[in-house]
Image (tube, rainbow, N blue to C red):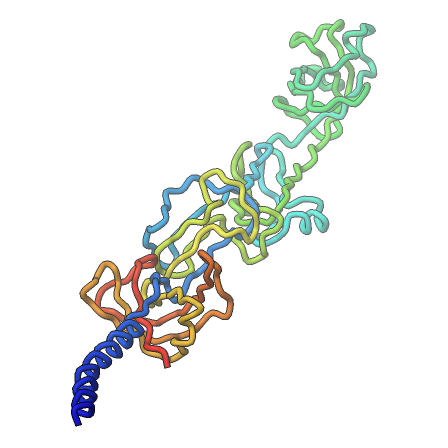
Length: 360
């Protein structure tokens, strides 16, 4: 009888202790957590539309932008008018590849000179002096019409080929086909005679370039000055629908610059320049230890606590579980993506803790 009473007392005393141990074990299991970080549900990649050099920019990581905001600009190749004149034809339109246009027309545009006459000349008839047979590009020469010595003119040598040379007329009134006598000396003394020639219509000037046409600044019939902008060109690898050097934001959000995006940097078509993180929909990505992965399933509701709001608990739903683990410190962790919704703004990179459910 005494033994039975003692056994009963022992059971009564041990029961609360066992219950406490079981509760402690359950608590330990339910307190399993995983570190997590906030990420945008949608991240949009901004890449270089063609190869080129990034012009200086003030954009920084963390800047908030709206759709259409200019993020970067790529340097362009500028094509300028080589002479004063009138644009006779424009063969290349925005989106065209210069090489294709040139293959068809021999040029991308054509300019008729303001000074439309030249003299096709040679040293034939020059005064018998060796120096008079050495014509130099760029020198100024003087001449008169052989049938009317009172009709005088002035010009500049623009090309030399052996004994032949070309003079661009800068003054005088001549008809095409007029014969002239040419001199180095303004007084046109006999000993300064360097040859003779014939007045001709100057050839139109071809305008050429390489790459994709982004913009054309002139139109046929327009007068232009030497050095005036005619075209802006991109790299040859640009697509036909690329018509500007600006790279704009495709969506609103926060910008994260890529490592290779800096002012003056050479970039290549398709190279990542920046990422835009959409702030309107956020997820939390938890790193779950492989030994705890069986606790989590797609569709589960988990509790999330952000470091910046330690007193607030947020419910989230498991959207996906990565099938590829990341090895760290002799363990493997799997990314578990959890969708959340909060009354405050969650920003990319915010740290959080995810409470995992108790094991089965």
